[in-house]
Length: 264
Image 1 (cartoon, one colour):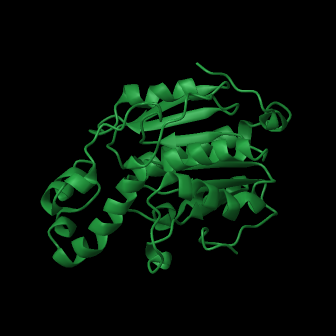
Image 2 (cartoon, helix red, strand yellow; image 1 turned 60 degrees about the vertical axis):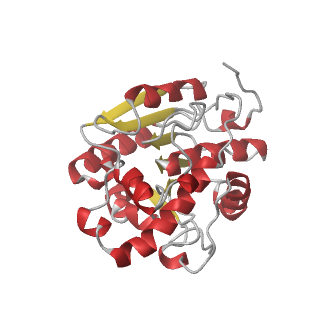
């Protein structure tokens, strides 16, 4: 089993849903998803980047050009059966680029991409480099996303652990170099929070340019971290279950290996 996944992958499941966490987080943010989705024979495969949780002692990766090939090499053995991606914030960008890497390597693509809380990748990174921020400025910056309890922000011991992790993950975001728009031949469902102060609804809707297949956007009455709200996550599960249940291999899956793409 690879360290990049938190649990062994069963090859008996109908569908695998690979989940990619947000900046400063870890695979534990998807705890509880497996139980909710398994009744539809969907196996949740939570991806763990190095330098956090059970991989805390490993060096973190701060360059996209390093991350994506390594991630592909670790997951390619599991990508022969039907699978989908869910990525949240930084995880959405990782999922999108990993799908492009699969295409580059002539590997089956995900039959659907669920991309949450991240602007479409062709939109310029709108923030100053975190390397230019002192500790208080960086704390203020990450606090704008929400999701960090005030008690934790004021806990010096917690901040000594969390801030370096978040800074490295934002450096990873900053390292991303947008590609010319090469629309993927798999459906995209882009998701966002109505009250997200960092990612607008326009940013979410712009993902439509990145697929030649079906596109839908969905907005939850929450902020950037809607996946931490039980009611909203329940709605998200219903969406994932519905889309996976309705998916028909003959319509899409085999065609995803075609090398054609459109440039818009």
